Structure formats: structure tokens, C-alpha cells
Length: 94
Image (cartoon, rainbow, N blue to C red; front, side, top):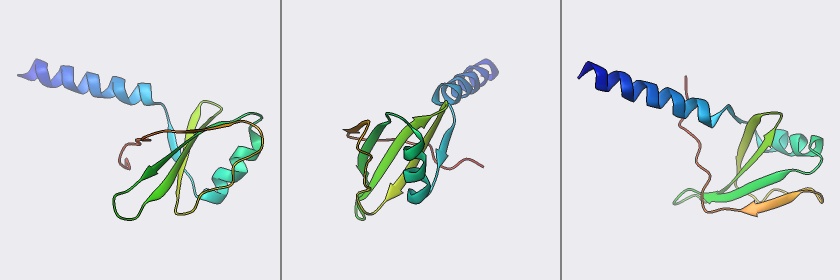
């Protein structure tokens, strides 16, 4: 049984490494970040069952930044916005 626990722990650590660093920022910071990116690819999805929000995700310098907003955020003229079914981010880690 001990070996099974070790294998599960190793698999979880590898999954966390594959996800990279995910940073939650407020919507205004997210928009400021988009201004720094030449041609961003922004992923956008609706989240929540009762209070529907928009979730946005973009990659910048090896980090993934995301934000949630009750309103649709204005996207830059350059780059691309892709509507996706779901953007999953892990529960907040300590």
C-alpha cells in the first residue's frame, strides 16, 4: 500500500508541474497585462451556475494569468480571442 501512495503522490506532483504557474489577477490588471502583449491569444469562457461570470486566460512570459469578471472585458484590437467551453484552474493553493 505504501508504494501505491508514493506513485499517486508522484503523479500529482507531475500534474502540478505540467500546469505551470497560474496567477489570478483583478480584471484591471489583466487588461493592463494585455496591453503589454503584442499579439495575445485570450481564452474566454463562462463559469458559474447561478452567477454567470466570464473567465479570461492568457499566457505571458511563461506564466498563465487569469481573471473573472461579471462584465465582458474589452479585448485589444490585435491578437485573438477564443471562446472555449471551460477554463479550469485549481482551487486556491496555500
